[in-house]
Image 1 (spheres, rainbow, N blue to C red):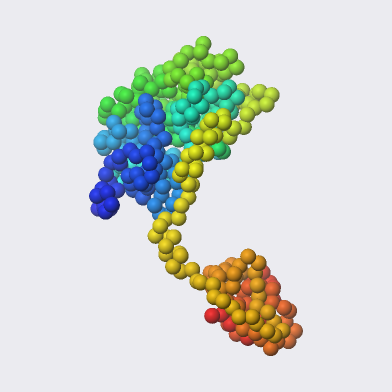
Image 2 (cartoon, one colour):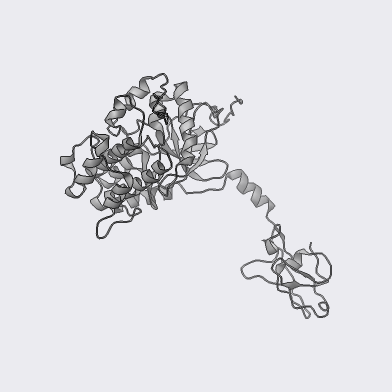
Length: 409
């Protein structure tokens, strides 16, 4: 294991368990600095999710960490990181893109998703002040069912769908939490030939995970995660979005959503619908809502989050270094003669430019020349200022450029 990196400001290392922070200047986790938590109390059983900024690039991401109850479980940490690495394989437009995963030597695993601004489903209901509208739930169900259909067609079982694993963004929902049930229980999928699943040592985090309403009954009984378990978990998530309650029966659902969601929550896996069939049913309304359409209160919460935490900020060291290298614009005396300096609209003389796809360099005004080469067309490309004194040449675009008295400085 590599030695930990000490943060001189806080006295902590990148291997220390982070403390939760709800403001800028939060604790560091590897190369990320925690900005704010996304969790709602009572809804962070599977993982902790927070906004974080990459200190290398300045990008704001959604960072998922092990729950506090599992942070000290060495076996869970290994499984969490393995499932995070496998989540890169999850296809579909509504799967949260994975941009970074903790290295194997990191003591605390994490996974970074590129979906900002974003609210977890419980946070969206809190911002809205209650259950989501029926058309929003239908659009959410269609998007998530489509994600499951693509995953199952590629031989993947999500095994981690829960209300807090669903993020709402301006572009539509994003599904996170891949494999968190497997990480918590230590049960790997069954072998293709029907062999018994392998089970690792179960600890108290696994027992706590079995109490979640989104966990299908067959998995509570000890069976491994299977595709029809994902459908049950999807039904539990949609029931929560439509009612605002974790554990609710079909009678409490809106009439327009009761039949498809109740089918997902069937105790018998054989009676649960296929994800592609479910997606078509949710889109069967005359005017289906787009996945990115959210209630005004949720949109306002996303806008406030984006305003408080910019999506991308250049790191301070990169900004200062780049500013030190920028050339200063010099005063250029008026030139007299037949030829005027080549000008580019919106670009001050003495500024930086990249001519014809070449390296960045400083373009300075050319010296007046008595005349161009005989038979050469007028200057049309900034590449002439970057070429040494020579005969007529062509840039990469094929435009003739020739001023024999012009040379790069």
